[in-house]
Amino acid sequence: MRVLMVEDDALDAEILEISLARDSEQAHDITRVETLGKALERLEDDQYDVVLLDINLPDAVGPDPVRQVALSRNGAPVVVVSGKDDEAFAVDMIRAGAQDYVVKGSEAYRNLGRTMRYAVERKESEKQLKQLASFDPLTNLANRQEMCLQLTKACAHADRHGDMVGVFVIDLDNFKLVNDKYGHTAGDQLLKKLAEEIEGAIRAGDTAARLGGDEFCVLLEGIHSASAAQTWADNCLKRINRFVKEHGLGLPLSASIGGVVYPADGHAVDELLRNADLAMYKAKRDGRNSVSFYNERMDRIFTQQQELENELKLAIENSTLHPVFQPKIEIATGKVVGLEALCRWMRKDGSSVSPGEFLPIAQTQWQMLAIGRLMRQQVFAFIDHWTSAGFDLLPVSVNVDGQELGTEGFGEDFVNELERWRLPARAVRVEITETTLVEETEIVRENLYALRHGGIGIELDDFGAGHSSLNYLRQFTIDTIKIDRSLVAEVGVNQQAATILAAVFKLASDLGLKTVAEGVESSQQLRMVTELGADFAQGYLIARPMAGEEVRRWMGRYSERQKSRLESMTGKFRIMSDVDLELMDTKDEKH
Image (cartoon, rainbow, N blue to C red):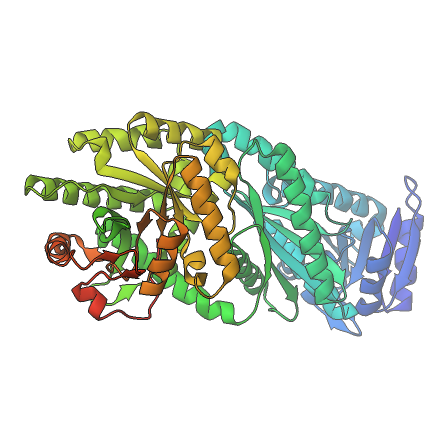
């Protein structure tokens, strides 16, 4: 048995060695040091089976040396040897981390070998209990409690050696899709495999933990620069991407990783984990499948986001989100051929929240299903009101988020909801983004089929925003493609944009598809997209998004002034409306 004796008194040390020499059952290899500092150094470099610890040392007295030795990397059982025969004091030593407390001159002192063997057995029992209490039963990784303990040790080690500790929170993006489509058993199996993959990305001595759900944490010790932490995180993300490509069940899974470096990004364990969590959420806000490291600005952003999340939850519960409607015209005739419903949020104090602020939060919190239901109820109610009042039926396009389209049965539920309102299928159209098709799954296909089977037209929104693929037009029954406003804005100032648009319009025409130019804000833009071949136009030049109560009044004013609508031969096109007279530079927020 390898024994580390921490005793500064030479006579006491000699008596301890004599006591151990009388042990006939086991030989002992004894290393003696005289201070706590030297003991901790030994425990860093060598492995010992037990530590005999005096608690009156030149550099430490009382429970403190017990705690530091117990928390050392070695993890050897600690037997305190003291001349103080005090039961309450002995209990304090046990609470500090000792396996036994031996009074000099006692029976246990005279049979120190047996006492140490009992200490080793108790330590082993403690390890088994710790395994149950400190490790995740599904993945066998450390749990949050054990991670916090290891992080405490790692920070203390870093302080002594002048190096750094990297802490990373890893969250699997879109994991909910696995449970929803394949069930929780399949989800658990995926998490177990992912845990093995994460363990394979760390070194011996580092720690991987499962914090809960699909959130993991990695602790890297002994790193010497922030760039080393960045390199590890980037490599880990690549490794996870390879993993989900092979084992991700065909679902659009990825990972968001947030990182901090001790001591630069915090000192307390809770602070480090919180800041790593903030960085992870920043990675999600940046589009997921990315790595983000903590900076102090995130605290302010996090506080604002938490407040907005709470407000949004109440807004959904109280139905204070509402649709506004933006007309769409046919370029050849100037006739209004439809409306698009856009989600808006007006606070009780009259201030509004930009869709660019609250929709990303809703997507992160999986609230798009609730928002979608709320919007459809209000849109269908407006359509019913308009038609009951004798208003000509205009198809209203509703935006459908990827979370909705990726939910099993969504397409059938949509059609059934429309039927309950006794509205014809031509009363609505569904707008989906290219991103939704990039993340296409079997459930998405089934929902698109159900919508088409129910007679509902489908428009591909934001075409040209960065994920364009002609393959979508081949695979899916799309009626209309809506050209992203970023391309329309370039028309007239960028010849390449005009060339691209002309090709898109020609291709759409050959495929029997209609095209909508979005974000048309000037006469020049409208003239250009007209010449290039667009079928429809939508944007501030025609009208701003308006409340449902304003639609009929606007339509009446528009019809009266429709005479001065189009002079195509001279390239002069002008829609006159009250809104046109106060045209602003602010870009339309399209959501």
